[in-house]
Image (cartoon, rainbow, N blue to C red; front, side, top):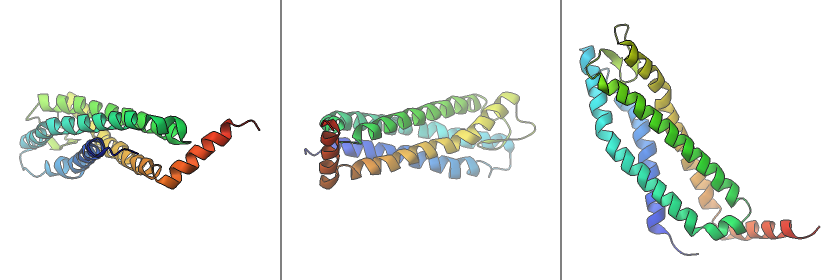
Length: 186
């Protein structure tokens, strides 16, 4: 097997940043935005943090996707020859699509809040009674989405660990043997 250190590094580091940044935002940034005493400053704090993180997050996601695509191409023979690799790859691709979708949706909702910078809020994803209706609706969706991103990217980390285990020599031999015996007439 050839080494794919650069591709694997892009895949893993990109995914780690995507997961870690979203978890930090949900646990840290959105909650910390409640610290200013002026409710109008709270949305400004959250917006400033998320606006700074967005380009880094986009680069991390891009690195992950490039690494994942490269690994898929590099492992195309295993995909066909080793039992279980194709189904794992399909599940991983579907989960990546879901993570991308919730990330894009969260960014769209965050942009709605950011457009109303200075709107009074309780925290990054918590409205007040005096929060404008459009910001309240966006924050209510963000309250759920802020957890959907680390959940989906965390699941991607788990399936990536499983994919790594499938590359052990004993797993490759067993998977290829299973694939071959399944094709033999019974």
